[in-house]
Image 1 (tube, rainbow, N blue to C red):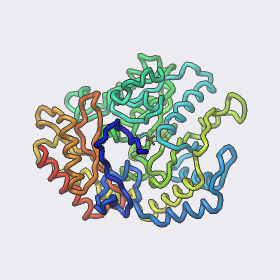
Image 2 (tube, helix red, strand yellow; image 1 turned 120 degrees about the vertical axis):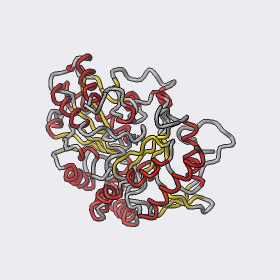
Image 3 (tube, rainbow, N blue to C red; image 1 turned 180 degrees about the vertical axis):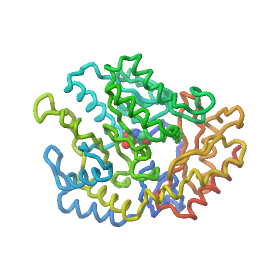
Image 4 (spheres, protein in one colour; image 1 turned 90 degrees about the horizontal axis):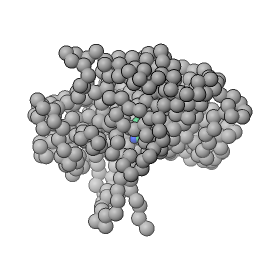
Length: 431
Ligand code: PMP
C-alpha cells in the first residue's frame, strides 16, 4: 500500500517530501515546512497556488455538468476552444486530451493522416531534436531526444529521426558566429530521408526539460520555412513554454510563426486538472472527412473534461487580468541570475521569461559538464534551504548539468531574490 513514484524503484529507505498545501509560490509539507516552489510543480502552476477562483470554477462546473464526453460537445469545451483561438490569433481547431504525451501522439496521428488524405501516403516520419522531451507514450518517447529514457522499452515505433539541437552554448556546427546551421541540419535530414517521407517536424520553442536550451534567434522561423518548402507540418510543443512561461502567451509567438499544429499541456488549467490540447490549423482539419476512414481515429474518455475546461478558462482570465505573460517577460529570470556567472563553475545562465537554466561546468574554458551527481547535490542544497528547483537528465549525452528554475509567474521581488541567493549559496557549497 504505497505510491510508486515516477522515476523510482524499490527502496525501503525512500523518504519523499509529502506536500500538503500551497499558496502563491509556496508549498508546505506534512511537517509544516514551507518551500518556495521555483519549479511551479512541473511547470504547471503558472498562476500560482491557492487560487480560490479556480476552485470555484471547478465547483460550479461540477455542480452544473460534471462530465460529458466530447463525442458530443459541451459548453466549457466550446468556450475554451474559442478563447484559445483568440490567444493563438489564427484559425485553429482544438482536440482535447489528458497529457502532453497524448497531445503529441494526437499531433503525430493528425500529421500522418493529413498527408494520407492529401494523397501523400509515404509521409510517415517524424523529425525532432536530440535533448528535446516530448513525453512517455510510445510515439512521444520515440520523438524524445534523451535516449536513456528508452532503455529497455525498445523497440519503439519506427520512423522517428533526430537532428542536433539548436544549442548556442555547445554548438559544433557554426564557426565564427551563428549562421543557423542547426536549422540547415533539419533541411539536410529531410533531403536525405526524401522529403516526401516526412510527415512533420516537432520542436519546442525552448528545449525546456532538456536543459532550458534557447535556440538562436531565427531558428524556429527558419525551421518553419524549411517545413513549408518541403511539405512537412511543423508541430510546436508548448507543454512548458506555453501559458505565459516565456513572457508571451505561447513560446512560438516570439518568432512570429504560425505553426501547423500546437500542442499544450501542464499549465492549461494551472495544474488544477489534467488537460492537454492539440491545436490544428483549420485547413488541415478540413482535410478530415466527417465519416468513414477520413475521420480522425483517436478517442479518449476524459479529454476536455468540463471542469478542466472551466478551470482553464478561468486560468486564462487570470493570465490576461494580471498580465502574467508580460510580468514574466519583465522579470526575466535569466537576467536576474546573471550574477551567478561570477562563479567559475557557471558556464552559462540562459532562459526566456520565467524559465531559466544554469549550466554547471568544470571550468569555463573546457566547458566540460559537471557530473549528474554534482547537479543533483546543488538541487538538494537548494531544497535544504527551502527552495525547490529542478535539473535536466540527459545522461545519454553526459549533459545532466543544468539547474532549472521556473517559479509561478506571480513570483514577486522577494521570491525571485531568494531564488537567486539560494542558488548562489548552493553552488558555492557544492562546487
Ligand atoms: N512535452 C514537453 C515539452 C514536456 O516538458 C512534457 C512533460 N515534461 C511533455 C511533453 C509530456 O507531458 P505529460 O507529462 O503531461 O505527458
